[in-house]
Length: 604
Image (cartoon, rainbow, N blue to C red; front, side, top):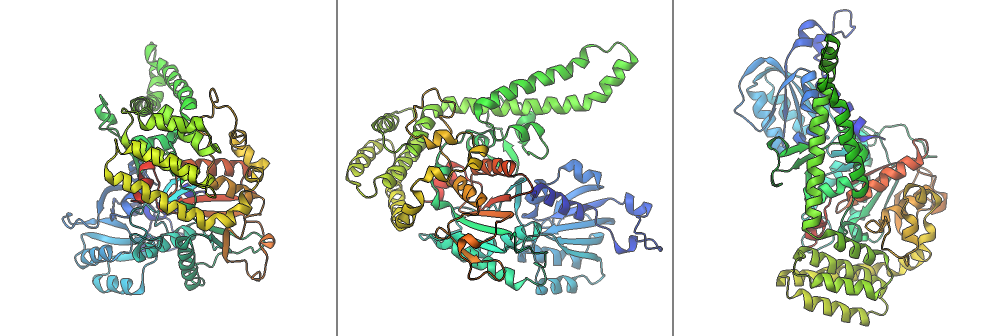
């Protein structure tokens, strides 16, 4: 399972679309010269613009004779009947209205309509009625109603503040339907018919989404989900809840991709550097894609220390390759220079881009005093209890230079961790929290103090509701980490030995292990707890199976309601590499890609 290949497949289906009239009389399907040279226009809507931009570059489109890209919402386009029009939109009421208007007064010679999800019969009838002069030559469903970030990570790009009904843990009805439709698109694009659907048993939102997806699959089972099915190795969909692991999105990230997202922001593969001091005008907005940028692909999961070494090597490599400029003394030298110049120019731009990104990250780390903050956060996340850690927390909370946002987040991390540890005897912990709150009143507005209490009460309720089931599963938690888990995470030993001295450790900023890693470990052993992850669908003929009798999964889609972090994506990447293509393949997705601020704001 490779999402990049899925994206390429669908883009190629669109840009290489042929008219039925281009078939030669002998039926060979060879394109005529006129058809090959015919310039095309691509019309998108506000939903598919981001989808196509994350899968194809402008150069890719130009190679297929697409010289004009516009939006279906723009009604002021010129009439150009000599052009073939490729339309790629989401079948929303708004886009269908625009298409009806377009077909009623066509601006191009012929139209090839592609929809990124299922289109209804009523919508098709509206389009047919509008197409009086029969300019539409093709209508096709392209199932890519989601954003591809890398080969194993996707996002639905839904607003984390709106997916749940206000003041509750249940879905907003509109977003439940939207998320269901998006997930059906994911499954169809991967050609997966889930033989097993599992969900977080403590989450109403996960259960609701699982049931909604199951209903849609059954409705379209014969028409769309008619893929080959192997009950001995069923495809598996696992739906999780972000609130089951709130610690992971709260901690400061330290890998290249996640740091850029945290401190600068990545939106649809674009990074805005316009606010960076003294930035070159050509670098104000840069593209960052692991598909198109080999250096980024190689470094996106490296920590900041490892990244520095890689950047140094990258710059040295550029200097070596650009030396050709200094010795042009013959025809052969000129020929060599002309051949290498495009590569050197591209390399120069990429070196400048990554130097700007790394330089800005370094500046922000120093300016925000992140180094000490992150070390304290990580210690809180992994230590049982420590007076030294608490003293460090108080020192940071009283530091007037530390941004108030980081003080609020640090207090949330402390409450989250120590409410869990001292749940049965919380008197001492209450005193410490009261002391923290009194300090914070000097630095935070009353809204943030109220938010802190709301945050604590919310997760105290979660801890209470989950405590009985978790007691069984968390005893000997570290022993659950198999040899395979150790293989795909070299920091596992530090996680297991929580009393280890931290100063001087290479892993001091990356001690925390997301809960997702434990799920992957159990999944690899076919030992995933059905008490924690209940089954909504089992393989055919296996309704009475016990959890241990479920066959091992091969293709797995894990989806997190409430958003996924790029740190969790790193674990999926390492897991897939450790497993190899022949055993188990995992795709990860979420309602959105979270930064620490995104997560905190989603709970307000």
